[in-house]
Image 1 (cartoon, helix red, strand yellow):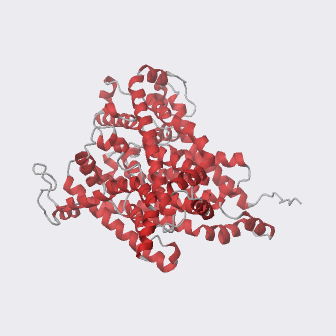
Image 2: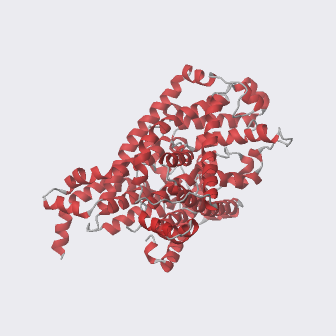
Length: 296
Length: 305
C-alpha cells in the first residue's frame, strides 16, 4: 500500500528552501566570479572592476599561462607529488593507527587512545615545531618540508576512523576470522579493509585536500621558489600585489606584474583537480564519516 | 592474570606494530615540540644555540604582557572563536537538517556539492575571491557602491568592517564541512520513527526540536567540545591571507597565531613568539579542561575524556 503524503506549502518548507538556495548560491557565485574573471580582458577589470558580465571576454590569461608554463607546470608537479605521496602515507598511517584502537580488548588501548586525543588538546605551537623541523631534521628548503610537518596524521581523523571501525565492522566477522586461525594482520587486510571503502574515500578526500591546499608549510619552511607548490606560487603573487599597493600607483605602471586575470587563471587551474576528483568521492564520503564519542 | 595479559600482548603483536608508524609520527610532530615550549623561559642566543641559552624566568612574558598587543590578540582570538562556534553550529545544523530532508537525490547532491565548494578552495584562493569583491577594482566598489551613487570604500584600510567580513568568510568556508559531519549522523538515524511521527501529524519543527536535535546531541557536543579546545587557536589562513596581511587593520585581524608567526618569521623575535606560543598552549588547555568538567557534570557520557 502506498502512503501519499500531501505536498502542501508550509512556512517551514518556504524557509527551508530559501535558506538552502541562499547558502548554495552564496557558495557557488564567488566561484563563478573566479572563473569568469579569469576569462575577462585585463583592461576591463582595471577599468570597470570585477564583474559577472565582463565588457570584454579574453583568453589572454590562459595563453599567458601556457606560454609561461614552465614555472606553473613545475609547481603543479610538486603539488601532485606531495599530495599523492602525503595522502598515501597519511591515509595508511591513519587506518593502521585507528583500527587497533577500535578493538576494545586490546591491552593498553585507553592510554594509547588518550595519547592520540591529547595532541588535539595541547601542542607545542609554531616556534618549537619550526626549530625541530628546520634544525633537527634539516627540512628547510627541501621538498620534505611540504610533506612531513603537521599534515600527515591528524588526531581528529584517527578518532573518526576509529568510530567508523567500531560502528561498521561487525564483531562476529572478526570473531569468525580468528576461529579460522587468521592472524591479526590477515584479518585486517582480508576482512576489515574491504569493508572500509567509504571511510577510505572520506580520508582520501580530507587528507588529500589538506595537502593540495596547503601553503602554510611552504610559507614557513621554503625560501627557494623552485620548490613551491601551486598554492605557494599563488601566495607569492598576492604578496607581489601587496608590495605593489604599498609602492603606490606610479611604480605600478613601470613594473610588469602578474595581471589580475592571470592570478585568477592560476587559481582556477589550481582548483580544477579537486573539482574533477570530488564527484568520484562524493558518494562514498558521507557514508565514511562517523562522528562518535571521542572516548570511544 | 599476568600470564594472560602477556599472552594477549603476544597475540596482539601485529596490532601494536600496525600502530607504530602513526604513533611515531605523532610523537615527532606533536610531542617533541611540546618539550620545546621551555624556550619561552630562555633568552635565546643563536651563538650558543637554543638549548645552551641562559634561562631568564618570566622575562619574556613580562615583555609580552607589557605591550598592548597581548590584550588585543587575546580579545580578538576569543571573541572571534566564540562567534564562529555559535554561528557555525546554528548554520551547519540547519544546513544538515534541511539537506537530509531533500527527497530528490539529484537536488540533494547539487546542494551538497555547492555547500562544500568553499571548503575545497584553499585560503589563498579565498583571499583572491575576497579581493575580487573588496579590492579597489572589486565588485562591491565598482559594481554596487559607485553605480548606486555611494562612495567607494577602501576595505583593506578600515578595521571597523573586518569583524563582519571575517565572520562571514569563516561561516561561508566552514559551515558546509561541519554540516556534512551532522548530515552523516542524521542519515544514520532510523527512518521509520521519523515516518511514524509524520503519520502521527508531528510537525516539521516539532520533529527537529524533539527528535533530530536530541538524537544529534552527542555529535553536537563532541564537535563543539573539539572547537572549544581550539578556542585559543585560529585559522592562520583566515586571519593572515584574507586581510592580505594589511597593517592598517591589524587591530581587528591580529590573533595569537598571526602574532606568533610575525614574531618568528618577520621580526625574528623568537623569545617573544615562544612566550606567546606557551601562553596560547596553556590557556587553551585550561579552557578545554574546564569545558570538559562542565560537560561531565551535565552529561557524563558526552565528556571527551
